[in-house]
Amino acid sequence: MACLPYPTFHLSPTKTYDTLALPSVGRVRIHPQSCPGAMLIPDNTTANDGAAVSSSITETTCCIDDPAQYYDTILQKTLLQCNTPQDTKENKQIYKKYMKQSVALASLYLSKFLGVDTSIVDVEMVLPVKDVMESDLCLAACFLDAGCQSIVLEVDTQSGSSSSLQDVMMACQVCGVPRERMVIHFGSLGVFTECFEDKRGEMGDKFGVVSVGMDADLNLMKKVAEEIVKDKAFKFVIQIPSSDDVCSTVGEFAKSVKEDQGHVSLIDPSAQQLGSSYASCLKTDRADGLYTTVVCTRSNEALGLVYSSKESIVAALQSARGVYYSRSRNSLWRKGDTSGHHQTLHRIDVDCDGDALRFTVTQNGDETKAFCHLNTLTCWGEPRGLRHLEGVLQKRLVDAPAGSYTKRLFEDEELLRDKLVEEAQELNEADTKQHVAEELADVIYFAMVRAAKAGVSIDDAVVELDKRARKVTRRQGDSKAYRIQAGNEILGKGKDGK
Image (tube, rainbow, N blue to C red; front, top):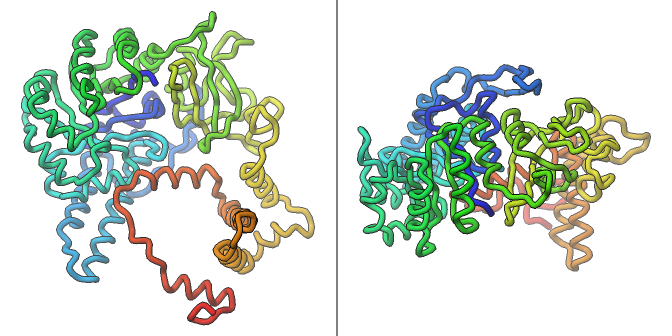
């Protein structure tokens, strides 16, 4: 995989028309106390490219227009959490309550206030060292449980509110987070040169990524990257200022380092700057210079094969939509402008050879969600498996034929509840591979009926699974007695389960 660039939101907003889709390059770094945060986009507003932008802003978000103030709210909640002793059952419950509240606030802050989808984008959250120290594990765990990929601690002895290397190392120890999810950032090349070599062994036990802020000097960038990865203990991030002419430097640098060793981060870039820099890291052997592009759903189902250009990549990042290059029209193809089947862009990925793209999107449409011109979801005909079942259930919800069992389940809440409990029990009791498969199919069917009735899709479940994969705190997972008792009553069993 190429050494790809991604944005650092330091002083620029994360949620304006020109920046909303920048994290869809797959990664973003956020300074929560200094980036201006969301421009509250009203519902059904038309962006400058004609795309409808929808924003669901809660009352909590609307009453706070300063990201530093919102961050302080989260910090205060985590301080309450870390100062709650867990010496009694009551205190443990209070501790859990504060933890749930702080994670919920952080999730809202990331998704609604900053407009970042943590289920599909790797978010690096820059936390003040003093706040991490004061809150023990709680602040770092709060943001990681809310979906962030990693925590960034900054060494910057030249700033007014400096944090020494020793402070950062102590804060990392307090976090208690796996090293692959910790990033140490040196605010300048001078600080990196002063600190890194003498302490690299100690840092290697605590941090998986070393990040350095510096000027966009190609030779120096190569030298610093080589120094960081020479013993394969770290990956690197070279953070440089954004400018209109930086893309050639980023492209040359990306081609000079080995695959999957690190990334370049652009501070407060525009979509044009980031998109051009991203495209400069790609390669193609096509005479027309286009990049083969696979378009997929969030659950990795291929919708179709298209082509991208440098201009279409920039346009996609500007509009948060699926935008490609049409070879037949010799122009940009903004999917949905004529058909109405537009796409919400979530993420752009590059394959291991750096010569093909994957766009992860949500396919939209009024009555039919179709990517193909034949009015099917995919260019390979009607879907099968879970996606086919989902489509059938959505149709049944609207217009089920007479005598439909699915319609009966939609209308009879008690029946659907009982079947969910019954089939889950039968799955548990299945004793052969074939029997387990059969009972699993039953459970999936009834579960998807319940989901369709609630307006929940497969992609919604995938989002939740991806979020949970990033949590660092775990519940004990013990069974709940009152749920077991309720299930036994539905199955006609006594308190002992017989």
